[in-house]
Image 1: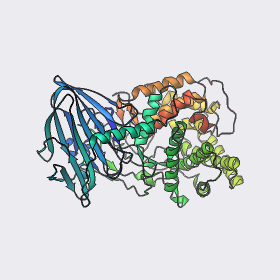
Image 2: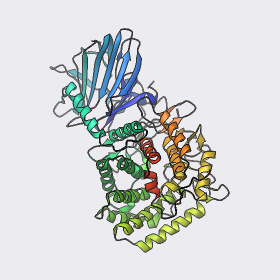
Image 3: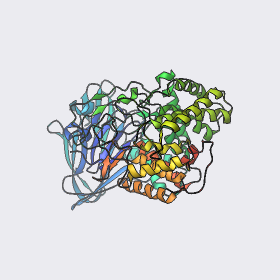
Image 4: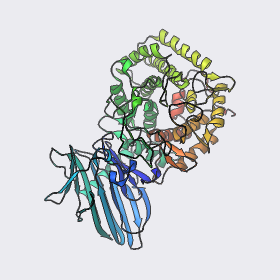
Length: 608
């Protein structure tokens, strides 16, 4: 059985990533890209589906940490015979991806064991393994080649490679794993000690750019490092997560592939990066979005591949049993073909916020924006699948309509502020029409709250974004009522679920955990309402949920007290960064984004 999700840590080279468990096992690694086939897939099956474990041969106690300001993982194993530290990292790539594992002797002498099981193509393909004249081990299947180099002796045993070795105080034993093409020049590892030094220097230099130095600065820094690790460096695209099919309910079917880039993450990610001082990363993310969205407006997708690929067909990997039996395991994501109206608002908003920060008056993206609005004027009344990507019939979703309003609102403000040309009269009329439509049909007077869809009685956490995007001022009674209904209906153990799956038909069996991003949206709403003590309390609850190395998943199970959902989750870490900055600065992302609304702002606390 794979480890608990919270027992994993992340290493990566900004083009792919691996998950390392507390027991020294690499249980997930896709090569050469985030969305490539996994060569270690024990996370979604068994050790026979591929893993690479280095661990003491006897009993041990574990502590671990990231080396300060880096993505270099240090796992310390204490035994009766001594102490060793396993140092795991991936060098920032020059040509080929590489995983380096160094076993350092700290005290005494410790017997160690390595278990190396390669299974290409998501744990299915058993490679042909050979030893080279220089001692390297080659594992080949189809186009894929992995080369393992180490000074310790290796032996084959039951379609895997084993090594028993010992490390004494003052010694370091190195393992270098390099990926390459089976029909190209064989890959070779770099000098491992030198690679460690270079990798540490690279991460420290990157981390030094962070401009936030207020409370919870360590949490902001760790989240930003995690986001950087989930950024595909060649293009700037940011993944939702590095995993697929980690369940939102144990044993359930809510298992999705998150190794792609969602447009709706754009504004949250851009503001988090810009407010923390990472303008270059924010620009690269914006440029990725513009390239991905380029083309015919009626072909805009909700997600793309890391390089902007459009085709993300969804298939099931039937030979993997799923994380602790949660099947199916899915590769690809059929939601890419859904109509989700909110993404038009996200694209328009991210362009507007980027212009505000850079004060740019020369922007070629305005042409794309005009075309998107022209198409949105034709389709905004249509039912869609929305932010939660409901599988089933589309519906008139309140959040989707609000974000359609945002699309026109931001375009109008861009033209007014920067002098761009646009069809202002038509856009203003459509903006007002959408606003009236949402207030008439998306608000339930009996509940005193906005609801999930027109005519529904169900509350949805996405309604917390209504004040955050400036659709209505925070002090509006309809916003206060919505927050009260979220507290009443959607809070579980002090955290927030997306919606009640027992009462909302979403095409799947009911049941999931609390959604960490939604919990942080409530904290942001409290902040805008002047309820900063409640906001701080909610933030601290999320901070306490982080695992021992500061990482968050998509969801949390308050009954089992464990992570669920894909991991680590960009939306959770982006939300954490934004909420911390919101609560500790005067001009955080929430006020910047909500300030786009032209209505009045009250500085007084609103009673809930």
